[in-house]
Length: 212
Image (cartoon, rainbow, N blue to C red):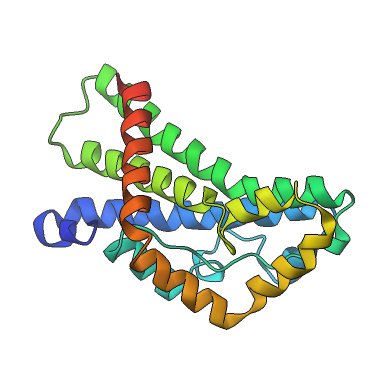
């Protein structure tokens, strides 16, 4: 767990938390920008086109990321009826945050490789560990959000290809607070094992591909 770093390596912990806050902020900003470009200005009007982390962070979602290994930020408000092209807008907005997390993970690895080439990175160095943790966390966020379970981004990616007659039911399901609690409990209990295994598999493949 990331929180274990606070006890063992506090400097690494605070570096990783800083990158994590930046990552969650950019993830949500990616959604907001994509929605704006697709024709819906709801997020812009609600102040979500911002690099201010406090406009995006969800306290419980952030704590879960530290303690449970996965979490979330405040969902960006959208009104799909404003999209110039409904299906394309829904897909673009949904995939934007995931793409941002993958790009941040790649940036962390590229920075690490550059530092290593310059002789400025050591296997046990604080910066090396922080960059590896940050890359792993961003891959975690990307994979977790890809899961096709409402209200995660993956569900809307799938929804963008589903028959339109199913969409009202999905929107009502996501708006139901009881459903959100049930989904959270499932991720913390029944689905936790398979989700963690999937995330670790993708992380291993990512680092194998990028670091050799």
